[in-house]
Image 1 (tube, rainbow, N blue to C red):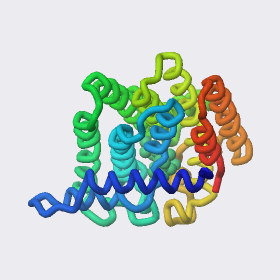
Image 2: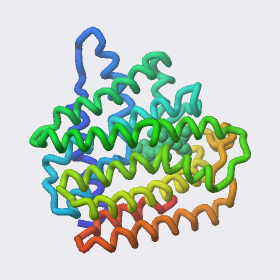
Image 3: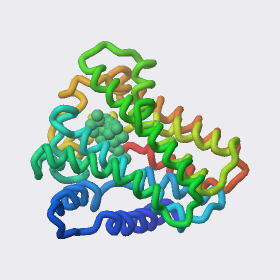
Image 4: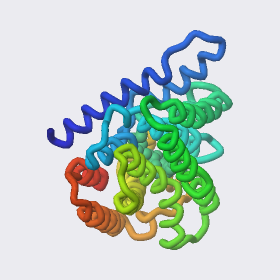
Length: 292
Ligand code: IPE
Ligand code: IPE
Ligand code: MG
Ligand code: MG
Ligand code: MG
């Protein structure tokens, strides 16, 4: 399978499971499910669940039992996007090829849809089929930590705090590591845990995830500038309007891309220390550093 076909196949698999995790409903609060489905289904690269599946596969794990836990990563990610786009945060009107959720439902309902996805992610993990309780607790603990104060939410706090401030590369790296890197790292860790990886293997996966998370956010910032129209439906980059410091604003697009590439190379070096068939994971990493 080439990487494009691999990604497509995995995306289809994940989409089918996401669709049944949050089905169309007709109970009194069905609008909550509709709102969650609006943001969750359709577009979205499914990078985090695919990273989990690819890591699991590399370590010879059972993919059938990995799909539902991987979907939990996408639920958390989608909640983070809904909240990230709110007027009180990045105030973006466009996401995943269509108007942001708060543009099509009241802001209060968008906020609640995010809350629901966050809460539901942990319910999904607690009820994941065919996993031991010990494994579920491991996954829940990792996700809570990496999506929480020491990870994504903490990173978003620092990101908002940094607006209009003169921050340097070191602070920026910390923000990226937390707001984006942590969930990417959790994704490959999920794959490792689901495949019964040992501590040494998990540590390598974490290092790989950390470096790829940094590369990923730099590329996202470059894309914000280069493809503002497609990404946010407007000419001026969202990060510019919001006065966000990025690698691209600090170093220029070219040099920022080189830094991302260095992180990618570091990630691949780490991965290659695993005596395993990691080709999908490394090809997946390669697609991440492509600005297109
Ligand atoms: C965008 O993530 C937000 C960041 C953390 C940079 P993705 O680029 O993975 O967004 P989707 O899931 O494909 O929409
Ligand atoms: C997103 O960072 C980080 C999240 C935790 C959602 P950005 O704010 O740069 O992501 P985009 O550019 O809106 O997708
Ligand atoms: Mg943001
Ligand atoms: Mg944003
Ligand atoms: Mg961005």
